[in-house]
Length: 107
Length: 170
Image (cartoon, rainbow over all chains, first blue to last red; front, side, top):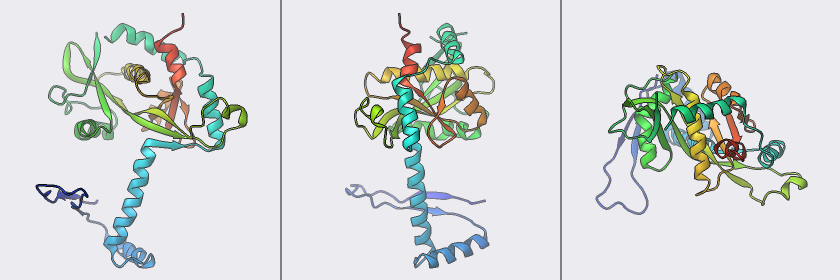
């Protein structure tokens, strides 16, 4: 199990326009994984395991955050989606019942 | 029994006492929700029983969402302005306490009603929801949500359908 700690370095009294603050991230990982990371770092031309991990994590995290706020539809899905917007379906019976119950029980 | 909804207020609402079936959602409410509100990332609303207003029966969070479109056939393309990206509203999280079965649909109704109300301020063509497990996915499908694109756990309901419930014609 990874053990994560995170500490913010103290921000300067008047913070500069660009945020140069750093934070520390430590993780305990199996020795075999460390070996694999070293090998991958070398294969991708990184001079250290840290720089490899930082770049890889940054790319992965950015993708995760973006996907959490966006869905990209392909052409077929776009057509089906737009059709459903232009002719919205009647509400499902369960949802109609839920709205009726809400009018009774929620102020 | 009368419920009401309030914006999450950590000085009054008992977050530690909240236990839904999904641990990640409990942790979100207890550790992350208030920070997301402060950073304008997501708004969290809690449902309480008027008789015990510190007890969180359930909660949901809303934020903005974007749906990217591919190419449309000409007959559809002329009916929509050429927006390659459409605005929507995301129910990022929705959970009820295990002690209050059956209240999930009341959370959903409030989230949909609130999302519809927001369209008079900022456009939104659908409500998107993120189902954390199969139980949640069945819940959304039962209430008329359809799968959004290729991601099986992401579903949506057209704002036009919600309007029929919030503002019934005639």
